[in-house]
Amino acid sequence: MYPSRFRYEAPRSLDEAIALLHERGDEAKVLAGGQSLVPLMKLRFAAPELVVDINNVGGLGYHSEDPDGTIRIGALCRHADLERSALLKARQPTMAAAAPLIADPIVRRRGTLVGSLCHADPQGDWASVVMALGGTVAARGPDGIRTIPIADFVTGPFQNTLAPDEVATEVVIPAPRGTPAGGYLKLERRVGDFATIGVAVAVELTAGTVNRAGIALTGVGGSTISATAAAAALTGHQLTAEVIASAADLAAEAAQPRTDHRGSAEYKRHMVRTFVTRILAGAETNGGAANGGAPNGSAGKAA
Image: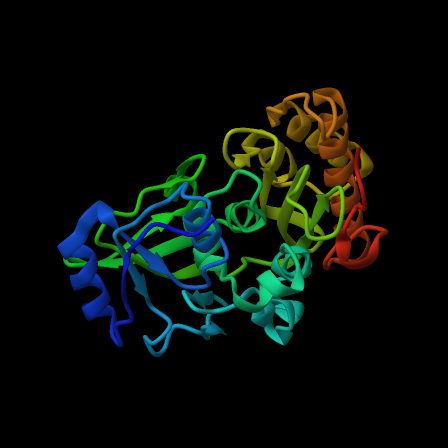
């Protein structure tokens, strides 16, 4: 199917892009990677009158580290850039584990982390990763820049808090307060599929004790779930078998899965528990990324 007719603009500055969005309001959509928007338009689930392509806007393709350890990812930074990133491999194990698991190589070549967050698919991987890390989204509009915690940014399935005339310009991951550890595990029916479930775990360790933890779940609710009780059960403790088991049980309780063709609700809760246990056991062992037993951290196929 072909999309409905639309006007196409490719501004060369953010100010120009914001002016176009302000002019057309809800009738306009921003295009960065296009890996979510274009299929929706072709199926006519989305029919914007104006598409504002920001790929000609300079200075948005970065991912970098501030002197204090804060990581910033620009709106045009591609999934593939993060997959190959030496910075993430060295400094941010949870993101490094997730990057190779995003969709397939074709999508990773053009799609963007910021665009994925804006799309707010409940089965999207990056929202749970950024949530576990306590990240924020920076949005720029006619009134300037505002910073939105990821927990407030994604409001529901395919819904975010951006105003019609705002552009999400970057994602900010705060500097760790200790040694970062953790990982991301994803259960998928085949490589490149949406997650049946996904689990992101990020902990920060000082002398073997967790001083900050985040656990977030993909695909087991109407939107990304922050397992706050599970994270709280880790904070202030060493990663003993008992502490890990308690956190895994609480994460499974936080999940809100439904029985469907991908598996029963009981099975999905079991996999949440298993993935949390596996990631934390790896973090306790080596203080780094925990990718599980399968290549690239994938858990393989599911029914």
